[in-house]
Image (cartoon, rainbow, N blue to C red; front, side):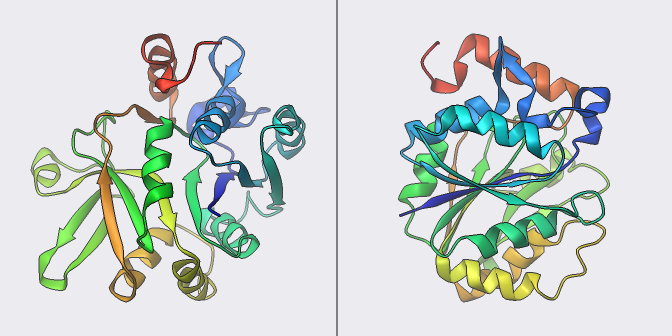
Length: 253
């Protein structure tokens, strides 16, 4: 059994007033259909129906919204009471602690085709990363590299900037925030996270880099599939446009 860990605790401040009193995942991208609707529908299509969601900002409205999917999904909510004072690593820690088996980690602003989730679900590696060899973000801040000298992969994050064209050429592709994590890798990551201060920039990806030499790993290219990480208003508009064209591979309602 593979479960899903969805992070949906943050404020989403880069979307300004749109998320002042509404969680980012509840923003509409197709009529009344929200980011969360598309996430849960894609999970359902991929046969992923056990979902743990870390909630914080606007948690009550998120909990109420999830009741719409009670017949289709077994949804468990994990409350992060410190979402405003601790970084995303704390949500990751709470989420990984709540699951004792293989899981697929997804960040709460990701809208992606079910085929990407299927690739992760079918992977037998301890860690499976998703990359896009034809980057879709306007500005790419995270890529995956192959370190031949160490026979491993490396998630390369630009916390305060973006990768240049030259930097992208030397990468396997843009990193997509969806990861298959085996139960063994989950425990190794928890051991790393337990030493963190949960303050400042995210360290979770560094923890993944640290454990890769100890586990089996792989990556999958998703360039033929649609996905959007809704960080800002332009991303939100792109998600809406894709809903009108490909609808992320889902049936039109």
